[in-house]
Length: 412
Ligand code: CTP
Image (cartoon, rainbow, N blue to C red):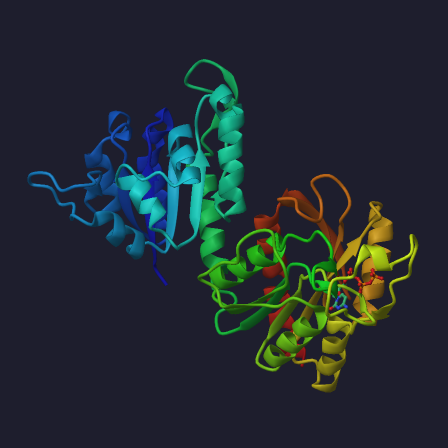
């Protein structure tokens, strides 16, 4: 199926490569429309771009005399696009995107998007490495934007380092791969849990953990991008839940169990990314536990919570394993061999199809962070995904799971 690709060209020298980028995209079957920033017009000609794309070029936010641009072009272009590519992306447009600034046709269009966004930065090395630019790129990655490059090499400003726009062939390859994979989960229902559960001791105190919910939210976004119908069941999260994805918020492990069981039978793929409390208070107090009434040391009686994933594994076994179950293994060991051992144990005990093992107590890994390193462990194989953003990890997990799901269904 033809995909509509909107190419936004901003004002960097690498803009001179965009006619060949457009030509390659058209060859690969994309319908291409181009928006130019006013600075990009110094680097590349509208006539070349309209000739290779076969479409008029847009650059005005408001229609000028004899203009082909519509007065709400930014909304129309955002709705037309199945995928958007910003190439070359200057430090300026990256900063605008990260901060929601909308002051020209490209930035207003980008703010009105709900489709996958690819950004190929190109700029001087110092500008690229500046903490402000790095922070802005990080912000975009966390939102699920795909950052392509930049490459290392000689730059137009006679310096050398990271900042060169990735070559058009490689950019196109990434877009084509995404296009091929993007609807892999069409027609499937994916149930995802995320965040931390809370077990209340009294009305004002609880036992919980620092899970942020970020991984589960990225999984929900990626599953939806891949065409799935998604349901997100969240415990407590430190980031807002996506308001464009159906979700339900719960608090305790038992509430999560009920919500998951309600959705289980209609789901094809279930991902238990929530950090679930293993124990609850034997007796939850109705009023605040007063300090003055307790001795210096005292015991809190806890009792085991149900293991939701284990229950799902058992249910799935009874129902002839029609569903694909993914669990996480949150461990405090860093050694890959130890992680694999712990993950395999959970894979067997909880009767699931895939375990994502990760270390949760190291810098840049596990709880609260924006990046992680994981080991995917199935019954047939295991492999490490090196440290990368949680958005990219979510995509990798779902790409693996959707391929497995197809194989798995065939053997059932
Ligand atoms: N899980 C669950 N119900 C629980 C505890 C965990 O469904 N009561 C799920 C988690 O969502 C995760 C997987 O089981 O997908 C493993 O959770 P983890 O915290 O790593 O391990 P536990 O099963 O709690 O075991 P342990 O604490 O001994 O590591």
